[in-house]
Structures are given as structure tokens and as C-alpha cells.
Image (cartoon, rainbow, N blue to C red; front, side, top):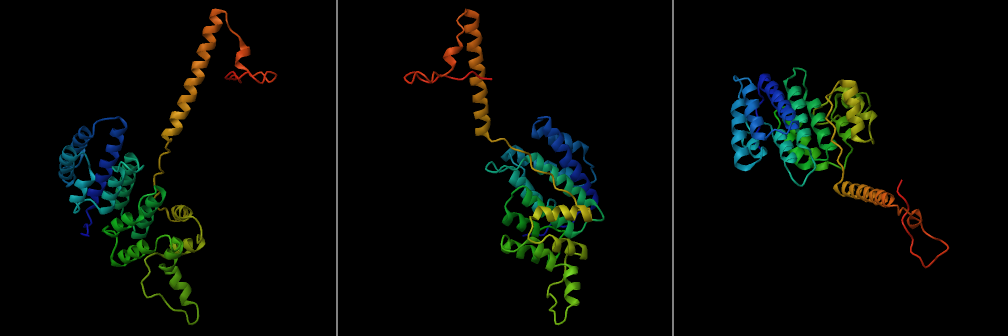
Length: 291
């Protein structure tokens, strides 16, 4: 995989504005082509983003998709950014495009910050995979191509990719933390890890406290204690079958009420036919009057 270079902070600031503006205009049901053309005029012309938007617009007109253009712009967009848009454009998935834009906006803001660390970025990206039920294999592979991570981090991500579901995430963080090295150093005849730590002391302590727990609890603790960025929550979906069923029930109730009103106006309103007659076993049970 081609390693995406780190961009100047002004590029990530404009990317955050781009993803935020797109999401806002999509809420107004504006056509995507019009959205891209409108946002392009607002982007800082001294960055490379306007040229990237031109390419996105051309690909949208040609294929009706974004992620293929982002993939070809691998020198500008990271593999994880492309992975999220591809997941949002997958008709078989349920990952909302607007949520993807919100995630990318926050991630771009985080990249532009001088206090950003590889550990915090990993936690943010991995929580996106967990919380939105995206494919771990493809997601971790995309993360490994992120310029935030050095060779030690890429090795860790590849290891996690092979062992996902087999070993607790908190354990993996703990044994690759400075806190684990400190603990081992205090023990007699303890073997120090061969691989260098990639997480700090505080991350290691929090991971140790969250062993054998849900990963989302670990993420929440890291956000509280270390001010790691929070991941936008998935939107609640209403199952289509449940929606149709509820609408059908409502229609039947309305139809029944209309029939009652019509019979009442004709003077033929008879409540008895809406109830069953237990004394008469040969008669079919009637319908109970709707509330």
C-alpha cells in the first residue's frame, strides 16, 4: 500500500470545513454536484483541496461515487478516509453517509491539532470500526496506511488484524504500553518485551483496569481521562418491515373508525356485531372495538 504523506495543518483544516459543509448541505437535500461546486468556492485557494474537489466532481458525474476518486487521490486522502466513504456508499451496508462525513470532519480537525498523537488517533479510528460495525479487516488495513503511524504502529496494526477477536483489545494495549514495561522492570527475573511501547503509562493503566470488558467502556475511559475525541454515534434505524406493519395497523384502525361513523350517520349503528357471543358457539367471533 502506498504510504500517504502527512499534509500541512491548513489542508486538514480545510478538509474539516469541506466535510462539515457537505454534511450541512446534504441535510437541505441539495444535489451532490451542486454541493461540491458551492463548497469549492469557499475553500482556501492556496490549498490543494480545490483541485481534489474538481476530481471528485468529475468522478461523481462519471460514476456517481466518491470513494473511487479518493482512492486515486491517495497522495491527498488517507486510506481510512477512503474506506469510510466506500462503506457509506455501499448499498449493502447501513453506514450513513452523513455520519461518515461527521466522522471525517472530526478526524480532520484532530489531525490539524498540534496535540494529536498516534495512540489517540488509533483509539478514535478503531472505535469507529467497533461502534459502526464496519469490517475490521479492511478497516485495519486502511489504518496501517495512515501517515500518523510509524513502522512500530504498522506492525501493531497488522498483528491486531490477525488476532482480532482472539485477544482482548485492553490486553494488547496494556502489553504495548510504558506502564507494562515499568511493571515488568520491578519484578525479579521478568522478561522485558522485545517490541518498544507505543502507548503511554496512562493508557496502559486504563487498559489494565478495563480488561475483559466491552471495548466501548475502554474507549469511554480514555476519552474521560485523556480527552481523546469522541466518535459520532450511529443513527437509529427503523426496520422497514416494522414500519410497514405499524402503518398497516394504523390504516386498519382508521378504516374501522370510518365505518363506525358512516353507520352512525345512517342510524344503523350496532355495537353488538363488534363483540363475540360466547353463548353461541356456532357464531364466529367478531372484532373488538378499537380504542
